[in-house]
Length: 55
Image (cartoon, rainbow, N blue to C red; front, side, top):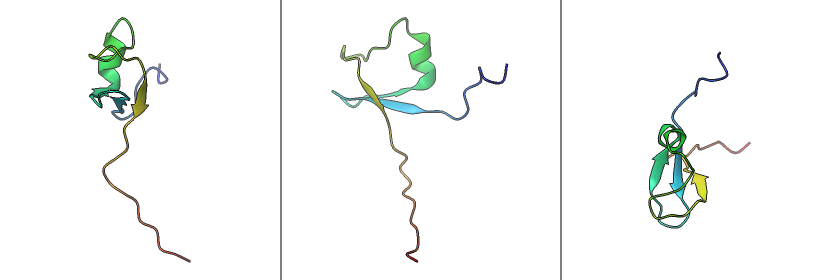
């Protein structure tokens, strides 16, 4: 199925310690948990900042 494929590599980071974890690594674990034991992740921002011209 096409919906089962993950498009791109999404990186998440732990809210407590900031450890980056990929979406593939999280899917392999039996439960969603960081190495520090915290369970809250956020999506890491891209290092490239978009700049737009003012109108």
